[in-house]
Amino acid sequence: MVNRAKIKELMNESACSHSKDKKPGAGCDMPKPGLAAGGCAFDGAQISLFPYADAVHLVHGPQTCLGASWETRETLSSYKGRDHTVMGFTTGISTNDVIFGGDKRLQDSLDYIVEHYNPEAIFVYSTCVTAMVGDDIDMTCKLGAEKHSIPVVPVHAPGFVGGKNLGSRIAGEAVLEHLIGTKEPELTTPYDINLIGDYNVTGDMWQYLPLFEKIGIRVLSSMSGDGRVGNIRTAHRAKLNVIVCAKSLVTLCRKMEENYGIPWISVSFYGKRDTTFAIREIAKALGDEKLIAKAEEVIAEEEAKLEADLIPYRELFAGKKAVLNTGGNKAWSIASGLQDLGIEVVATSIRKSTADDIEKAREYLGPTGLLMKAPTSEQSKAIDERGAHILLAGGRSLYTAIKKKISFIDVNQEKKVSYGGYGGLLNLAEDLKDAFANPVFKNVSKAAPWEVSSP
Image 1 (cartoon, rainbow, N blue to C red):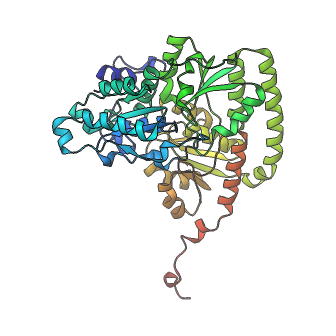
Image 2 (spheres, rainbow, N blue to C red):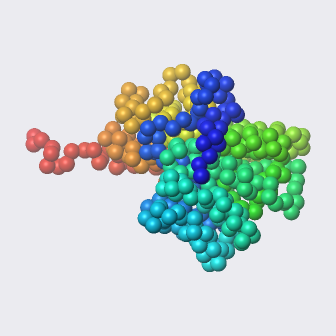
Image 3 (cartoon, rainbow, N blue to C red):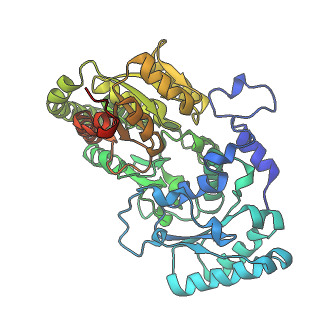
């Protein structure tokens, strides 16, 4: 069942930097009518947990709830076993289950999954229908875990409780309650960290993990890009939690600090400046002088190589202006990367951003930069008034770029190339170069031959 007290707690997270300015009882993620139209809590929970390829993700609800936006995300995994995320698992409840309860169907589904797929764990997602019916998935999951001797984790994120951001927090709560601290690692080092909030979309994590290896930093576990259930169970032994952009999981980090004494920092790996800052912050937080010195050595080496590679791109991008219409932390993180390439970001969308994200977006764009609260209606006007040369957004905004005869790049989760770390900045530069050189954006809006007036 949905725990109303838990939902209320997650909506008013004390670790948010802006919470002290809120009135008592006000939260940073209060549900509003239509909030779930851009992705509901169920969707957000799946996005946060599906990168665990060694677990089965079982949707307890109608078959129509099975599809969600995780299917469009290139959340890459290096898992060598059977990748369960490429399959859809659902209890597929029927009208009879709504009337009589779906607990027996859930129990049978757990038995079937263990027998045929032998996963490391099973995540069971409550949906709107089963939450309203009142199925006791907590008890069914507990009995299933005892019967099969694997973690069976209930995730209480039915869509009606709120948006994707809240769903991510609920997923973090489920992992904290049922997985973290349930297993000891085979070995530990003074430089063990947990990565929190990077889902390894198009392999973003793989851009900066080699840098960690050069420095001597070890990733003990990930929540949840390229993650493993066995590793997240040992996360309580890490020396530092590193939130990568996703502030929705700040509650998880705060509680791990309270429960296990693990400090946390928040960083981004988009762009040269932020990647360098992130590496320095991690090394500094781990507090070893030799590690800090090694980090500086690696930074100097990587930046010198990057700067040499970026020279021809910066010449091409001189004087270019961009409008950015994406979501959440990307409002400022991708803006940072564009600025590192010499492109002026004149407007960015903050519609799905937290107060922290909005504050950082203002910092990066400066006092004259436009922060769009309603980007669908504002982006066209921003392109005209600010003289933008390119629009970076999701696929639905492609028509706007075509209409305005400017270049376009899809930078949402459907993107096919990584923009993370130093190497990702080069990928972004190459995509920008190709977009600026692509004649289709100018030609497609020309009048058809039969529409051209005769001389």
